[in-house]
Length: 245
Image (cartoon, rainbow, N blue to C red):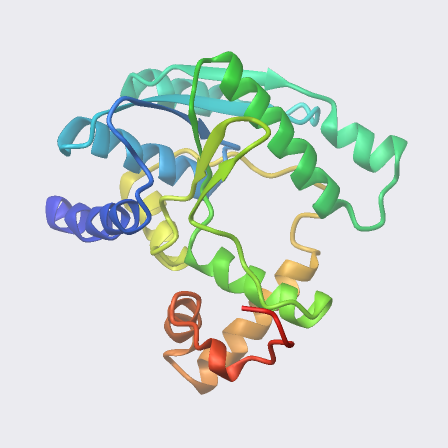
């Protein structure tokens, strides 16, 4: 039963990797792990693919210590059990944002600072690829966040080359919904570390999550359709100004 279940979600991840050419032979992938459910699931899945698929790559788990005094022992034990090296990069990102700068809208700056720290650590470890645990719901939420709060029709890309760092950023879970990730965590008994961020559960993204839940109550296929829309673009129906493509 477990093998059948694993095959179901592994097939979706392998399809995403194939569709967006995420992993090449010999890649050394720095897997960003925060201790949350999404990133620990990604690490678990990439380790399975490394062992049991035709893909030829290496993985190195990278965890950013944001300065909250979090206990990373469960993550360290998990990485030891599955045979994946773990590097914990100490930072003061949390105190800088919430105590020194006292940011009213901290998420954007925090994301940029975490991204920079993760990329720097990955390069120091000799990685050429960085993997993030964003999933299908994250892509949909980002789309709606940009539309509602910035008036822009945009989300993130499953794979993107970062010119400044020379790294390729990949998101292997983009075809998996958050509810599937929760079920993987439960069925595989994956360790999840509590997120101590003061803004956790009280962000614009959380508001959009509620909006999507309400949409799904009215239209059961809403989530799947929104995800499909990201790669089913009809430019003729958008208001492109003269000279734009």
